[in-house]
Length: 318
Image: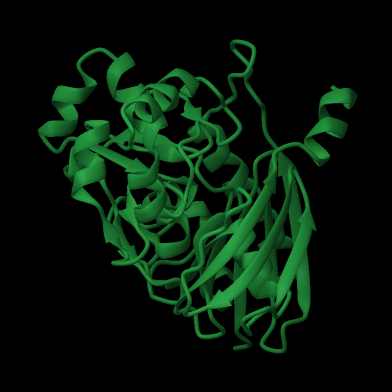
């Protein structure tokens, strides 16, 4: 039987699936938008279950278009919108609230309070990031503070946190794997990019229990295997690559050498520069982050982010 790879690209405004053959040729592709929720000015939310349903739809459609049996898929790769924050019940796999999207500005006051406490340098030094609502850490804290009884459930170990990659891995594996990769972890504001580990000092500052955190792998690891019937797929297919969308764009554009840079336009616009094994800090507001080399192993990068590019066109359309 011929073998194929399924690539799942879960973006901010839609989900896309591709089927590739062994030579890297696209055999089929499918795309589905999903709803954006704006409950207040500056707030942006997603329904994680809607995201999952959109992924099931595009995977099913791509497999049907390719006219292949699900058993012909030999591996899955995932790339995803980063920083968007989902908390779900470990037993029921049900989200405890809507996901807070990376664009959402509701935790601006939290970040300002941390800045007043003189903690900007601590976060910057350890995570490479600025104290900004963009990142997952303050979103996690907000959900724990605003869903009644949730912090107690989290301390008991009943709650999982994940960025969208973790949520999809969880759903694809039938709840067997609670994991993420270093590129997504590096965008949470609670991951030490020098040690490549969750940072307990930062967790304490943000009052986030470590029991909710996923296990972190390098981007080219095996993150788990599909449960039978998940997204209409066969059991046992390895999820063999996971990378946040901007780092995967750096990878996909072939920017494997230090000094190589990409600029891409989607919901937002992002420039990312490969700095190799050197963790560089910018004096001009760029973020330091973790990317992947050609084998999926961790390297470093600098990133500049523009939140709104294609999203403006969609907003005008809607």
